[in-house]
Amino acid sequence: MASTSGVSNEQLLDSATGFWLLLSCLPKFGAQRQQAVAENLGDPGKLVECSSATLRALGLATDTITAIEAWQNGMTSHPLVTRVLAIHRDCRHHDIDLMTLADDDYPASLRHIHNPPLVLYLKGDRSLLGKPQLAIVGSRNASRAGLEHARAFAAALGQCGLLVTSGLALGVDGAAHSGALDAGFATIAVIGNGLDDPYPYRHRRLASRVISDGLLVSEYPPGTDARPAHFPRRNRIISGLSRGILVVEAGLKSGSLITARLALEQGREVFAIPGSIHNPLARGCHELIRQGAVLVETIEDICAELETGWSAFVPEPASRQTGAPEMAPREIAVLDALGYDPVSTDDLCSATGLAADQLMQSLLLLELQGLVDSAPGGFQRIA
Image 1: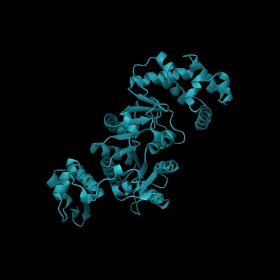
Image 2: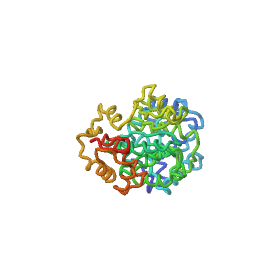
Image 3: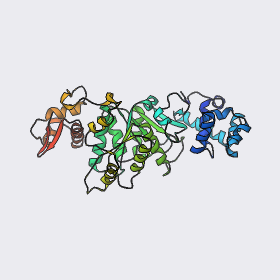
Image 4: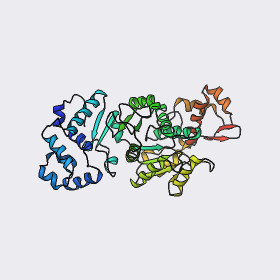
């Protein structure tokens, strides 16, 4: 298990972690070259043991060979070695942990995607990476209903034993993280810049919550700015960590559809929530459904699809639930205030003392669990 804590520069130069950091910074060492090295050596980390002749025989570029030789010889003046030492120093300063492809706890689901990250930078509970996850993604300009869906599904997935993973973006991503955290569940956020200054800046407080009660992840070292090219690369990590991906709202040209395509290429399940034909943010979801994505109306639609080999994550049918042990106090209060005749939202706010937005989130969560339904005049209990 790699850690930057208490490791000197000299120790880093002699460590596997340091060399994997170097590999992640090497010029002309992209996915194809990494794959070629892995096929010849079984592990890119073995390059540290190779002679100059072997490095040349592997077809590595001159700049790449020079950097590896500088590392082998402890030449701290070499620009790339200097950069690795600076990254190490910044990680220590910002309390950032490191995970390399060689670590035993590197998640197997991510290890086997095309072009897995050589190094992951982490803040929070790194053990969460190995937990079963489902990604929630969608529009940055989501509707109010889309945000409520993201929050409610995130909470319901947590109750089913699945961590919610997303990208900390504005809109659906942020709502999904908040929904999980507010319901008392951990969440994983994968970002497209350095962990020292999480982006977007409007979600700094949310990022702090994720670090405290979940995990913040990046493949970019501290000091790296958010750039457009980083986000598709980030998306492959989100889908690679997850058993499937739920698209809440997305336009036809949404980045969420790129994530969905990556998920399909990685053999993951793709789920999509349908919407109004008049809502442009529903068109991406409708297109995914046309292409074979699972249409999702309730949490059971997701659990049923994951049921084979995942029975531990399928909740009890609503008719068999007792409610109190599995639900947060807020949902219990709302359910207790409901009868089998419709009750208006104003009356429910008065009876529960909840604000309107909190009430609607709880009602939507109860709907997803099959306990409540909307009706003329308000909501009513159905189980």
